[in-house]
Length: 103
Image 1 (cartoon, rainbow, N blue to C red):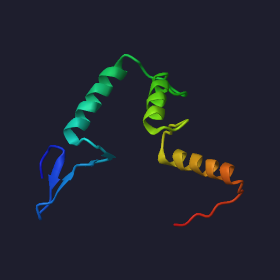
Image 2: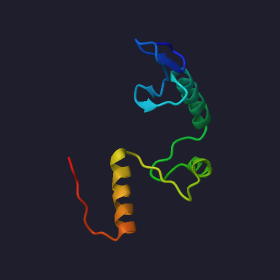
Image 3: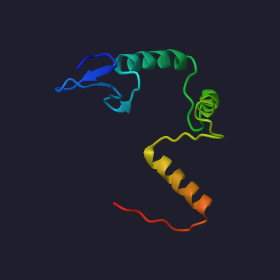
């Protein structure tokens, strides 16, 4: 395996490195680290915001809408919040009052 964007398995098959420990990193580990460094530099002067989303989120929303072609996007602090919102949206759009959960 290499530290760049490509990985080679024992059979000689090459693939892109899409995982970087905890997240999906389309461009590989080194690019991921540079992106984190750039984000820290950009966010340092913004300061913390407790409670509501930081105003910089509006720029991220516009960019994600342009990339995805969607009319709206949403941000969540956890996977639990994201799933709760997905359930609410599904119930709203289907008109159903109940759901089935499989484990």
